[in-house]
Image (cartoon, rainbow, N blue to C red; front, top):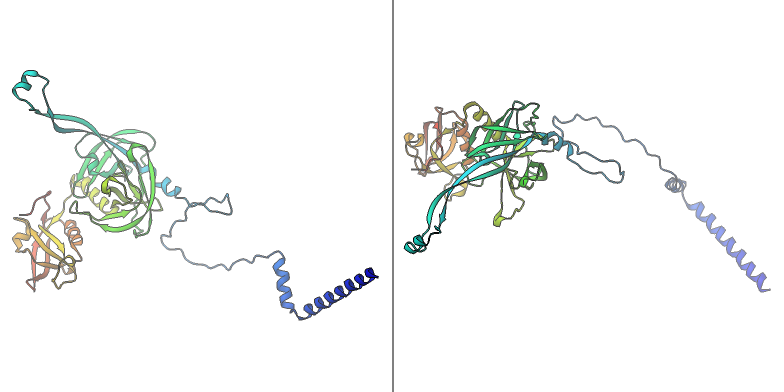
Length: 400
């Protein structure tokens, strides 16, 4: 009896569930059912519409990709390195450093007569300077830092393929810390200079050189700032980057993601002797300009007004929003002969606004000696202008 009762209950439940399912099926819209079927059915991928768009003149490069693993893509700059690295060389400059050494003669009689006295003896000690360079022409011109080769008696250059060749100094420029060497060798790979794609803060850059003499090394970073000045020399317009630059990287290449030369690695900020990831490179435009003059003249010829300046935004109560203030005038300079005075504020050069002292220095340096210019500004609150004939800038002269 109990068995029959349980069977009756089971049959009733089945009937109830069937009626419920039928009811639900009647209220579900055909569209929803279709969507549910599509959700569980294999998806059909429709091709995306093709949009035709002209590529920019110099489109950003696509990084190399490794598609062996479809779940991940590896970003690489190996193509940029392959383009640039063969043009980067190692430089070994042999020098003789002169100095003095205090010696105490090992002579009892001398020590009794002159107790505690030492003799100042001049010394000469051979040293070797380590650095890097960049081949900028197939006929063998190499750009590097001036401090790498300054005072060298012999310079050896190690090429990418392992060849070792001697180099001669074409010329050096202490003002920009640039020098040009000449090597005689065949099949020289010349680096491509970036002249169409302007450098911007945030751009990826690669530093290639020979740090600590361990061999060719590539480090990566971004452009942190442009137009940096360290106040170590007159003409400074550094590219700041966080790409690691160490001893031996000096004179090496800073390249963009195409492998094009954008700068010559030069300085590194090391407070307390520690590398904090702040490095500096000389812009390629400056390097090219200096190289052209060193090759043509053996030195850099610059126009010179003969004054020292300070940006007006660093001075108070000037009432001027742009320009420079004259803070020193060199004796017998064009500025002195033309009547320029300390305290004058210069706002235009040949009618063009002067933004800051860096811009004014670069403009006057780019002009040939003998060029006449007109400077205008304010003196004691009154407008003035005067004409100056530029002279050739002398080497490192102190203000009078």
